[in-house]
Image (spheres, rainbow, N blue to C red):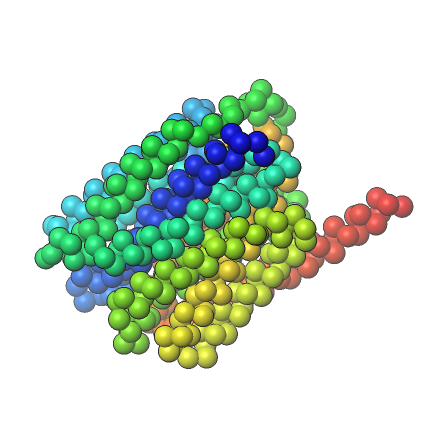
Length: 398
């Protein structure tokens, strides 16, 4: 990569860090805010987190089409504004003790995430096909900063405006959005070519039938869905087990670090071993996380399980994202990327909603057991697709 490309990737990595800090503030505090705003029915505590992911899912396709029309940069700026508006609504709802207003504001933050999730695809536009796995990894590596920044902002600012507990973190989200707007304004993102605007397009169903597409999307869907299912319930499970608020913030912090830390080398691993093998390893790490969770409720179990879960997400999501970029033509970019993210974040929204219900009515063990069948599906399909690809290569060699 040349110097200008590296700078653009670095700036987008910074934007990713700021966006993911916003997300980690929501993840580490939204369920706890809900406990303060709700009455007796604590099963609704994960609704605001679900609202974030639902907002993301609903906005993914419109965000992709919007950026196809006006450009990536304008889309990212608009997304940041949506996040700031959402944080303002959340802040007002905390002051007025309005649970559903808080959830409504959270949905706007989710819309911001929908736009920001295209940073990884914009990185491919900037870096080119040759460097796509590394570009995706480096941008997502910005989340490593978020692993420390987001939960720590939530932890240290939650009492800043007492008696309005947790008001501080949501005011901080407004500042983070403003900083993201500054960074993205300096990024050089190439405009779409004529081929991307006017080239031949296949029906979406034809693209979706490809074995490679199926494995790529399911890896991202299930990797992200399982992570959401378990992570969303983690603060509630920890408080229910007698652990402290600070413990839950720290566990989520290390989980987010584990999600994004491997990104510094995941791209190189994909370039060396291929997407399929990285996805397979990520699935095994997810199963290992479940096993550790089932072995006990000590603080160490939560730490180790959530770190393993973070590694699993990294390999499955980056592997799936890189693999899906090989399945479409330039003119199909917007609709395939939008469809991919709609499926991924629709799954995440469903998982986060189920998380609260499962944790409230059945407990931590059932939350984790629910992840196992999904992970085994990815293992089976990955092995199937790998064997199919090898068979096609042998046939071509003959």
